[in-house]
Image 1 (tube, each protein chain N blue to C red):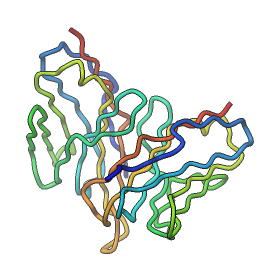
Image 2 (cartoon, rainbow over the protein chains, first blue to last red):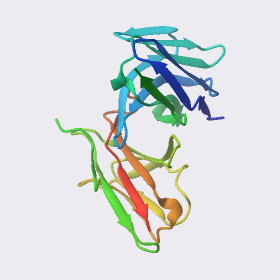
Image 3 (tube, rainbow over the protein chains, first blue to last red):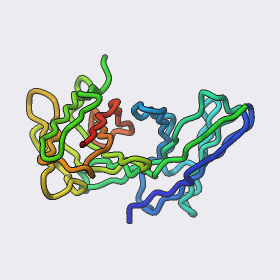
Image 4 (cartoon, rainbow over the protein chains, first blue to last red):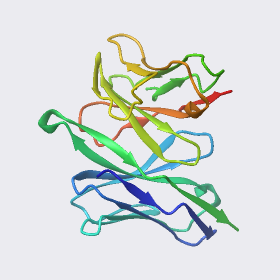
Length: 116
Length: 114
C-alpha cells in the first residue's frame, strides 16, 4: 500500500538537535524526500536520499534510512528559530512500468517548534 | 528562470461556483502534478499530466474535478459547483523528465469556499 506516517509535533530548544521520524510502507520506493513548509508558503525541497543509500549529510542536515524497517529520519543539528516549520516526508513510487513516472506520497507533516 | 507559477494565490468562491486554478511549469518542463492539502494534513496526489495527456488521475474525485495541460499555456485544475469541503491549498509541481529526482513545487492556490 501507499502510506507514509510521521509524528505530528516536535518541540526543541534553540541550539539542540532535532530528529524527525517517518515510516513508509511501499518497499518499491526509489527516492525518499524531506520538504519544509513555512506558514502560508509552498514546499521547499530540503534533501533527498536514494533508496540504496543509508545515510546522507548536507551541512546541518543528516538523513538516515533503514530500508529493512522502512524508517527514515531527518536530523537538524544546532536547530535555529528559523527552522520552525512543518516538515514533510515523502516517498517516490515508480508507476507505469518501463515508461513510467514517479508519484510522490506525502506524510501528514511534523510541526517543529523551536523555543529559546 | 522563474519557478513554478500558480495563480491566483488565494481564491474565494461561493458554494456552487466554479474554481479555475492555473499552473505554469518551469521553463522546459512538460510534466505536471497536482496535489491537494487539506487543513492540518499532508499533500494528497490528485493527477499527473504530460502535455495534452492525463497519465494518472487516480487521486481526482470522480465528479466535479477535471484537469488539463494543453500544448500551449498553463495547466488548469477546474472544480465545478464547489462545496465547503473543497476548501484547501492546491499545489502544482513540475519536472523536466519522467523519473526525475526532483519535482519543483509552486506556492499553491488557497481556495476558500464560503
